[in-house]
Image (cartoon, rainbow, N blue to C red; front, side):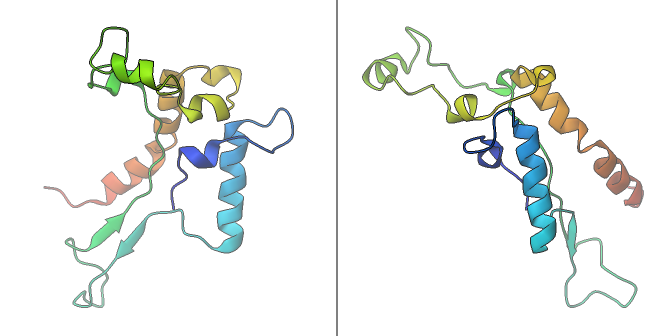
Length: 135
C-alpha cells in the first residue's frame, strides 16, 4: 500500500493536524493491521532455492507529490482550450487537495512538497540500486 492524496486530507482531525500527521496516522494503522507498505518481491514458482530470479516482480511503493512544472497539458487560464468549460463549471480547477490538505510552513507550495516526498524515497532507492547486479 502507498498512501495517496486522499489519505492526506485533513477533515475531522483536531485543529493543528497537518497532512504529514495524517501520513503518520495511516502508516501506524497499516502497521497495526499488518498492511504491507514496504517493497515486496514476488517470486515465480520456478525460482530456485537460493531466492528469486531477476525476472521476478518487485513492487516498490514510492512517495510522491505533483508539481506544476511537470504538467505539460494546456492550462485552464482565460482564453485557453478549456476556458469555456471553466465558465460553465466554475468549480473546475479547484482541486480538493488544495482545500483539504493542510501543510506545515516549510511545505507551503507544491514544489517543496514534491521535493519532500521524493526525499522520503532516497534511502530505499539507493538500497535497491545497490542490490542490483551490474548491467
